[in-house]
Length: 353
Ligand code: SF4
Image (tube, rainbow, N blue to C red; front, side, top):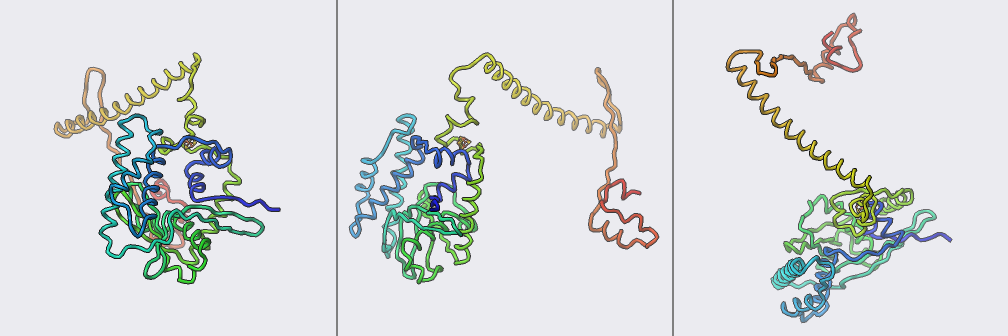
């Protein structure tokens, strides 16, 4: 019997970010405490789920903020101050969301929140179970709207939205969960990111061709994972990675006991950076000095200037640069007798000749 590969947007995205992180998380199943960003996002999502679960009588702003307070988790925060900053930001987001929602004249018809989907994708003899959660599914005048809440600050471009893998997979997930929605036409399935920090909504949709190509992409990504040697890809995102302490790229930083070799290499690394910094400073100063000397030579109409340690001579060099297209035309126009000049690669030397 063929094994069913289980995957999700988050797993595929983790692999793209860093194959080793994917291995730690999806294959070795090493559990790590949730990061503060994860807890922050998760608590806001839960509060919004609570807000919409009470309809038609939605909770008041006080009730909504109290829900957050009662369910808040201070564990991942470094200290009380950091905890208060994140909590304050979450309270602000909920207040803005509440005000935003109050201003909507025709309230959305919410079909479900936190919809869990499972879609079976088949390719020859392979099967893959695509799983995920959709934050909110609304019924609109023309069809359906899939909404995913984002706590990120950065807004993507419309082009990013039109190519966004998460929204494509959610569209597949929606159709897998509620196949009847396909009858409404894919153009009537709106895929939206709701950016909570700005209360900004950005939407897109998918065609059948795009969904078919996304399935292809999923299979390609799975094949890549299968062949992978799970090399780490360090990036600024490492600061949010729960596996940093066990990652080979950061192992030295977290070493608890240092040998003489370790201490020595630390000194070498420090010296390396000091020299590099000095080099940068020297290059900058050398350029400044060059400019001062050049100006002096120009002013005094001189070509050589002396100091106590030596002299500096100005050398004039002529450099040739050819317009490739014009050169091609000129070579093409040469008579047969000059055919020897029909050169393959135009170097300055050859062209001069
Ligand atoms: S710390 Fe960075 S390089 Fe190491 S596993 Fe995490 S993301 Fe990858």
